[in-house]
Length: 332
Image (cartoon, rainbow, N blue to C red; front, side, top):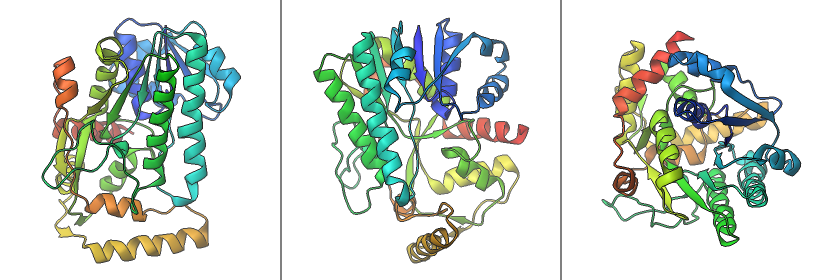
């Protein structure tokens, strides 16, 4: 039996589908406030609605040690995909609670339950910087800098909790997905950006990043549970591309005009400051922050050589990932 935490997130939903298609018995942890309807929507999108009733749902929270222990009772494999993603500076405490303490609790429960292996979902945010022109890889340690987000710090500290568990006898692997593109909850993860691009935009930013299809993330995690080397982390990268290319692909999919104007650094600097003021006055979340602006202007590339060598996997191109996500969004 496999346990999936964060089962209603973009990774969790695709992982549930991947495991069920592989014939696994699946248990899924969800919070009381979580809407499992997204799982039904994603399964239907992939023509697999008939598999949904095979999921054993367990209500619980990462911060509830008793609920975690109950969820892991009898589990052979644990896929820890639950996390909070936010770049709002005001959510630093929540990020630490969910991503760091929640991971510590999951590690402790896995150790107590004697699970065979845990696969922890981290992020490229916890990968360190590389010299200009050099692809970032798993060997590069996280460095905390002025533009580091609280999210990045929390994912780094969460990895340290996994390594603490390994030192205490836990068998675990870590995956570091790049920006995940795929169907998911509206207003969450990359769906937030896809929804904005659906409305059309004239602007693009000069930066670049790595992107990966949600289906490929799930497939790699399943394989690494058996084939990954203990204690190792694996970058999951489908394609390195500019944000302009991402925006163009989404615009084409939604039938919008492609962006033609570059947002200059000084414009974005004004934007995040204005958003900070607006969010303070209204109590709402900022649409742009210092961290997201820094990301939008940064040129980064990541290597998938390590996971490709271990699994021999092939990743879907960004064009296919965007088309799949656009189709899901258009279906409503």
